[in-house]
Length: 305
Image 1 (cartoon, rainbow, N blue to C red):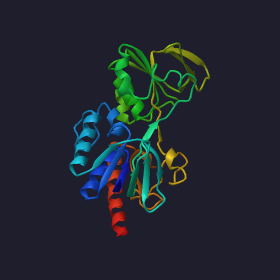
Image 2: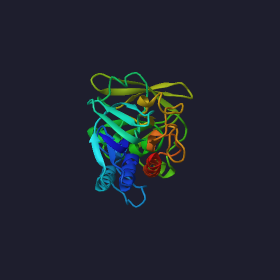
Image 3: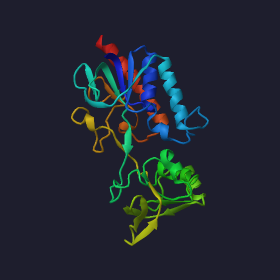
Image 4: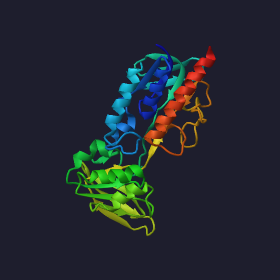
């Protein structure tokens, strides 16, 4: 299979890149291992995307997908095993032993939830531990929950989980939250949320399912036992760039380094969205990245002729 542009990843960045590339009459393939939408599919309510008055992320991503396909984007559900990006012709190898060739590639691989790295985390994955409040919140009706984190996602999801849980303990290792002020205000005003400042989770304990967590105050060093039914770990993400090591320039955290045109250090390879090094990771910035990357890819392909 040969294309002008192959886009790896179907989140907001990938979908926007597909819209712009297809409108430029480039033969475009969007490759996603699950379903288009990425982390946007896990957003219960989007309220800060311009022109969208508010609603589930799934709804917004579906509109983006339909728009991309309207302009001619082809989509493929497949998992990428490895890539060869260093040659003039780019090659993408899937786990189904298919090889896809293209003139340009736009990497919109996104990021995955960061692990806490404490005893019990691996053992109770799916048995009380979750990294997605929207996905699993309804499973904990009238239960006591712990949310670990202090950024936008953690605080917003702590509020969201009060729709189901009887009590939500927000565990944060610092003495102030990093979330946007409006999100913090919602948490402070919610009587079902209890914030534990300067506190970390040291262990997750249970038998068949999570029974309690051991927490520790980082200032006093004093441990405490907190009975809970579930733990939501929301401490950020790590970029999905393992397969790119040795081919693309990455920073110390594994994020792709690009210029302002989303160009990587490899000609014909661009990156957009959460996978690249940037100051702000939001839906609107992912879409902007995708539009810029597709436009830059179009100009690159024109330069080949």
